Length: 267
Image 1 (cartoon, helix red, strand yellow):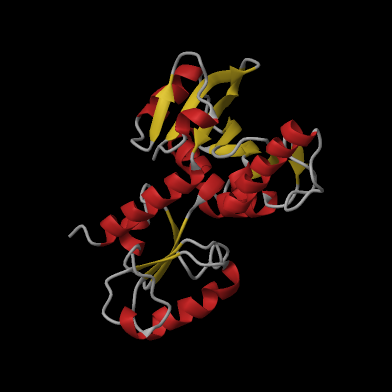
Image 2: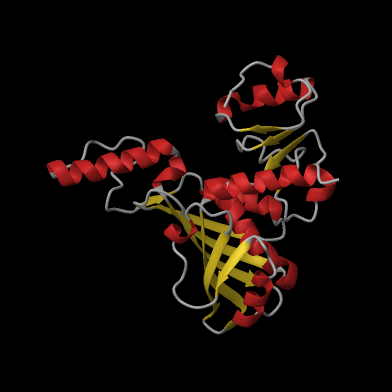
């Protein structure tokens, strides 16, 4: 694979997926606009920009907005949540959602997974771990409550569901990849476990596990879909359902971005 870092070879290219560090992303966006090269941004730098469409292929507005010069793709944890919540919002009108994310070490990239591996090896070989590196504390065999990143997740979801209130919490867990997420959805229209299950089954982006066990992070590893399980009514409340989702955020983001590109050129 050839990686180009100059503008000239990009002229005449049909489409670019932008996957660079946020610090340099806007410079590339400006160059793409000048060169009239359409771009799907996967860096997250444009997620809060109301002038740039924030899309997933399942979004009702995607077909009409995907032809814009620059669009931002929903990615990561917000994408997994969006895909799981969208069918419920269409059927039952979401009011409030409590999101609890169990975030893997690879949420901080390959470096996060490498650090976790080093900590595990150090603990077994030497009986001790080095000082924390990229995590606030040593992660091996521990769970670390997080505050960073939760506001960003809530902001993206609020942009996709402007009428919904989101409360997001996150825990860094000692696994190498994948995310498992608890969602408690409060609706404006009565919903039962059976109603919610039927609505979720209509989405081709989801794989529903109606029986035990509930899908884990390992089950979704390397897969393009969001796995859903443990659907239940919450304490007999006809306006609340709780369920778990599991997703390989990196693989899922790449697959949905590719689907956006197909949508742009499907005619």
